[in-house]
Image (tube, rainbow over all chains, first blue to last red; front, side):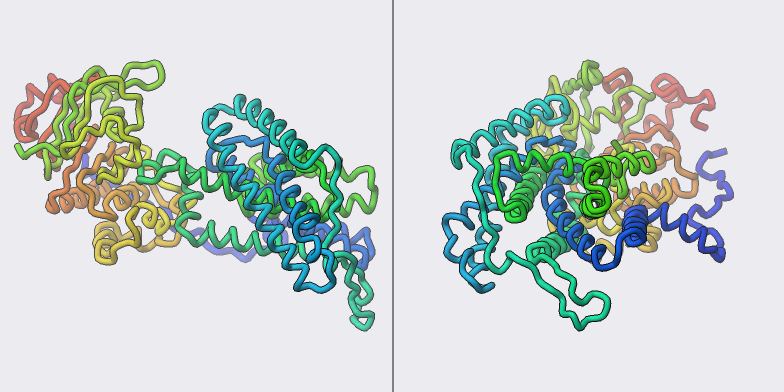
Length: 361
Length: 241
């Protein structure tokens, strides 16, 4: 008898399980399992509110989100380069520094007149070029760096670690050569310094003082996140990036040059690091060549926490790290650094692939 | 025999330190379905991967439509009109069915009429259009893999063991799809272990053993000659009946 003609009774593999009424407990464990990032965020917000009074909590939360926004800018490029080409770029911190110095130069030297003038419009004349210039310089250096340093060591993590650490030292030394070894103070533009007080007349939140700069960081972080999600979810380039994270070979088989795609992503990632750097520089109000390197622990925690290669994971990871830093820093300042790494260890024990895994590592 | 669309002459290829292909000579006639048969480890899959530029070619040449493509990078080979469906199918599981097809249509937006033809061939793809491809069953994934290969007109399809692990009913659906592609005069090189499936579809056939082609000719000749089948494929012992 012919093999093909022996029909077997088949069960429908896509038949849905009968819907059951779910108890709150089942719902909670479902939520915890399927929306781990939201569950953790909600848990952190609720638990912290239980120990901190509301007014302080709100200020800490907004500061934490601002911190998270800046961390997201700094980390998003690194998670994509790792996800797409499995390239471990430990020189990412140098691009953060580079962006900070490039943007800082615009603010403190080239357009300092506009930055120091009162009035939002004239400040924006300095801030927007500073952001763009930081992204531009970091992006261009990223292009050269990828060609010279990263490309020869594809597929070899050990070499990548050695070579990118070396590249990072060279970049930071170059910053010292160009800008000198001394710290450079950068004052925030007039309309971003100081704080905003919510009107006393408002119930509950009246009288709360919010730093203006942090609000900018929140807005910028959210805007960039929204833009990246749009690119990743809706555009052909985004589909290609997600496909490349799954299988580089299949992307090539379909007729796309994966290396060109990766080069583009690397440049964009470097530019974002530069953007994060200039925000970080304005936040700290002082520039040092090692400022980016000092952020690398947090950046690495963020991308591991979120799930390597995941933009959404990176965003939630950055928020969680930003928030836990502020909350724990308020309750017990000496534990703030421990909390960041503790959070990562805890999440990894619970979900070894991170909160929103996209690739298997 | 029709003029060849693809010719391999003396192709040698390595995977890491192993020599897998020891001089493959193979001709794929234009507009026909050619089946590549042989035991596990004979080098069938490696031959397809080598045509796509995915292995380390160490000797010989590959000529496609009159051009030597032996040293071309994979994306260039794909853009020249060769579609490859690997044994693993290579579906992007986190992408939706739609997104998988959007990427496969390299030259721009998908052609509506062609998409409709694909939906008629493989109705489940329409049903699960916006579902992640990773949630499809094995047979549906294979349908998607083949749909991706034909979403745009291609000159040559390389398909590696499409029937592997599939239920008989789905294998019949796939055979119908290949029949339609044959009618459209698409040249196809099909690697198969399933001899009945191959016999139904194939016009010409090549048999590989130990990294080389040991027999080539028409399928009619091979399917009538049981002695030859036994000699080349070890058939007739009930293995494939």
